[in-house]
Length: 181
Image (cartoon, rainbow, N blue to C red; front, side, top):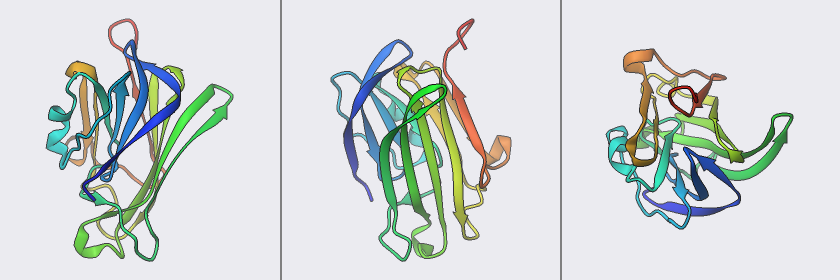
């Protein structure tokens, strides 16, 4: 539950003008989009790490951060990566299914979410939540975060300032600044 896996992208994407050729998937459900030629063995242990893990070589996405871990129990965790074609174009799809919260209650508290990243030039990254199970996975403890290359932009969405994420809810990170949202 403390490991990362590097995954090469079949089709690179461009985020903030930087070519991303691989990503790192964290066992806590965090996704790192890495600058070309960079692999990552860095991982974040808590939401407060968001400011520390973006060292200029990666964009960090934390779709749901609440003591998540992978577990092999009755409904085992799964992480799937693939590509999907839509009317808007092609997207990289990363799905974390049955991610468990709070190690003392792994049988009853889990959440699933799917992240979509367009191929080509990326202007938005989408997150869709589903499968909230248990009394501690209704989003009350969720922190959703984004950290860009070189720390230029950082956003955290969490229960403390914007209520909670909910089953079936989708969030979209719009990338850009100034007149290029």
